[in-house]
Length: 199
Ligand SMILES: Cc1cn([C@H]2C[C@H](O)[C@@H](COP(=O)(O)OP(=O)(O)OP(=O)(O)O)O2)c(=O)[nH]c1=O
Image (cartoon, rainbow, N blue to C red; front, top):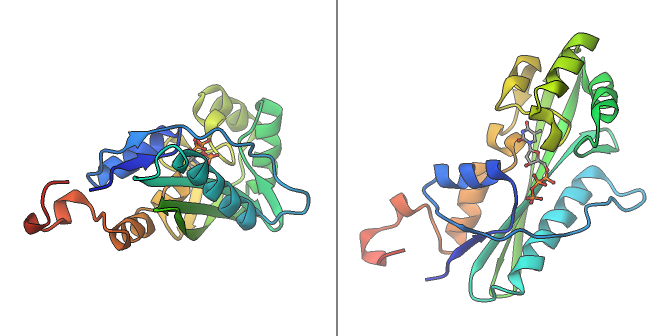
């Protein structure tokens, strides 16, 4: 039975996989996340998820290697993490009071083959006051999150509406991930038939 390797430094992705009962080994993929010139946000998310999975898979050819990437999009403009407070405030100015897309791509490498899926959600954030922007950034929560907010945290107070996948916005769409892993022979352990042997 293959092991599951999570090619991610994101504690959210690990926690979400654990929610399904998986206990993956974590191996961090170091890939350059700079967008290519003119690259559409959803293309960027897919390219990075695949690059992360492939980067780790070379060292684990017998295992299943899962990676993901989350990109916020306002039209053709992509938002990743904010490098400082000013960058976060600029994002809140643009994202507040309108709807944006959250693209999370997942990629799974098995036996040298790559399987992937793009999950798309729409999120409506309300406008933030200057005081809220400063206080929210100072909370520390936005620093390592795409779009400088966390739907699963304090950032929830700004989320007026979500259409799509809550776990996808958090960084790992669970429906699609479980489906992909199941198709590759690794359903959630609790759903693995007893006759299939130990996982
Ligand atoms: C929009 C949003 C993003 N995020 C997180 C998920 C991801 O961890 C992060 C997006 O950055 P990513 O570059 O997708 O991932 P990462 O750098 O954290 O981890 P790795 O590349 O090693 O897999 O933002 C939330 O936790 N909540 C949210 O509401």
